[in-house]
Length: 353
Ligand SMILES: [Zn+2]
Image 1 (tube, rainbow, N blue to C red):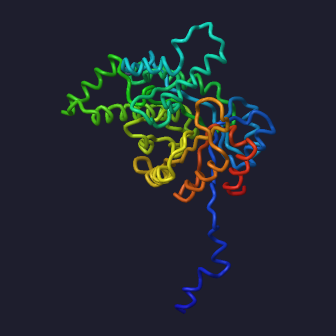
Image 2 (cartoon, rainbow, N blue to C red):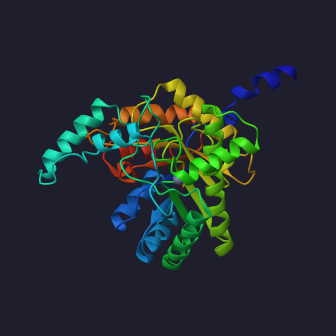
């Protein structure tokens, strides 16, 4: 009897129940099924959940067995976020806002890319230097006024949502400088928060304040969407990165919370593994209904200043995510999935449907 138990894992039947290479069961894509061919190819690559802009795209997604979500809600507020003078100066520099307006576009972009490479600009992903900012402004959402404007934006979006969509994507909810907003109202709220809780004005306590405002905002927006559309599922990618605490997504009550485990700029394998484990294993710490989804950034173009990955690199990273327990995946840029060489890799690591 003992011998039989020991031999059991070697029997063919037992081996078949657990495939040698694990695969992704679900892929959330930041891309659109713009036409029949694109929709078919996304589905073949293993995409199960996708953004749509029109009733036609929603229909195409359904035709190929993918779940469509309306795209997309972004933070609203009464004015742009305020940063330190150094951060404002950096933003001007990496975005070429100081360049002569008459400069031809190609020339302007060349200078901008050179500056972004020089400064190690990370396009909203985890910083590799002490200072980095986004390419665009995000409104200051930390106020009742910001929330009112956000509710209005939700209402407008929901009116436009095509029939048959299963929910909505959320994006660009975060801080332009990865840390916080320093407008007078935010600084006053911070000061009051520290005083009321008898906290010293330290980087840690500031980070806690700004993280909690971010989570509060996410959850208020999600609650509001669900109050209007209880049937809607909410899909999030935490972006831009919140520098003091990048993996806070389990505090957000999204149905599907994408958190970056492999950014466009290549990360070390042990970091991808560590982040994946955290995203998957701690997804339900605060909200049992939430699912944590490892996010991978893929850019297939060598030009410009955004990180580039070969299909081999993408394959290596997918294998690390799978080995660390990831079974769902979120991918941006969506169209990268359709590119020859990359398409085959995604197809190889997704379960057949
Ligand atoms: Zn502010």
